Image (cartoon, rainbow, N blue to C red; front, side, top):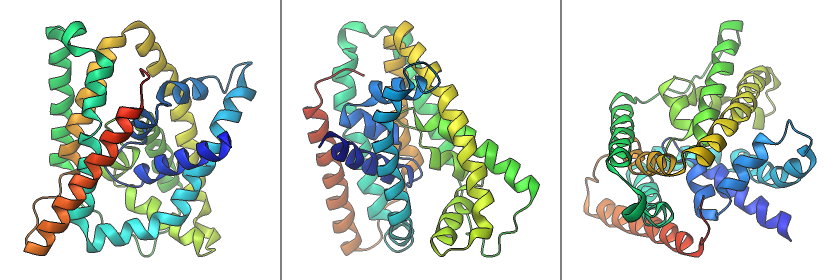
Amino acid sequence: MIRWVNIFKGFLMGICELIPGVSSGTMALLLGIYDEFIGAISRIVTKDYKKAILFLLPLVVGMGIAVLTLTSLIEYLLDRHMVPTHWFFIGLVLGVVPMMLRISNYRVKFRSSHYILVFLAVALLFSIGLIRGDETPPENLVVTMPLLIKMFFSGILASMTMLLPGISGSLVLLILGSYSIVIYSINQLKAFNLEILPVLIAVGSGIVLGLLLASRVIQYMLSHYTYLTYALILGLVMGSVFAIYPGLPETALSWIMTVMAAIAGFTISWFMGTRNKETI
């Protein structure tokens, strides 16, 4: 039963990683498994690797199911209903803030340095939102060694950020010009085009390496600089709104859909946060 629950949790995390600007780390926070998730990744290369794998395997399966089954749906929603879809995820992100404020005990623990870090994190995400651009899906992708090297390092950078709530790996891929290549490659693999497989192997290898490196750094920061790390995560969560922001709706119907989507996202996120009584 527990494994099926973790598969569903992984499925939710996988959905987040398909959306530029929404982090699976944010979803892990809402689900109350963030610390366990980070710890399990860092223990893969230790003597406790069996326990780590048993915890991570259902999550990975769930994330894989989400990626394989929902890429086409996500593409459709972002193409046909981009504004309401993004505002749903803005609501989802903002709904995390009350939980983070509670976990960080900001009224007692935060000093001026913590608030400065929050501001810097928000400013960073605001800047990323300004430089973010749309990509044109590659219709005739040619697999070359330079492309594979680019995808490998893109995977490293994306996975190192996906563990932090507030910055999604897909947003980093978008900034690096690799997001559309990954989505295109996944859809081609689903169509049994095996020629695209080296691209996914390259980015997948980079993701694995990045996860192993980043998990140890984040775990160290949470252990030795707990409230500074909380402040950084809070700033990243708040600042990610700028990275997702799609603009305002243009028609009355779109306004109604957008407002309902934003409220729904916030309500779901807030409700899940109230049920999470654990710290990070």
